[in-house]
Length: 87
Image (cartoon, rainbow, N blue to C red; front, side):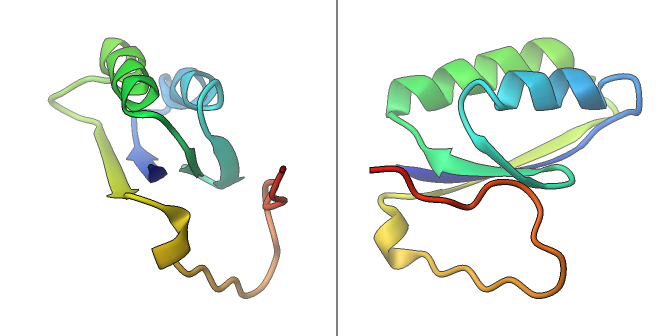
């Protein structure tokens, strides 16, 4: 499945969330990551992030598609993060 992850967390936890998420996804720009994951890897990512965030303050969103084929991306301005596809 193709996953987009967005996060808005407290300053003390930003780097920890990014480090955990980069084990599974590719960093695209500030607080946004994307990538192909298995269902098990997605659940593992959620467990890792849940250990870091404060449920009363932080927000993490996952957008999930069955495949990247049905998702389109259009970028404007500065390109941040890696957007290369590996085969």
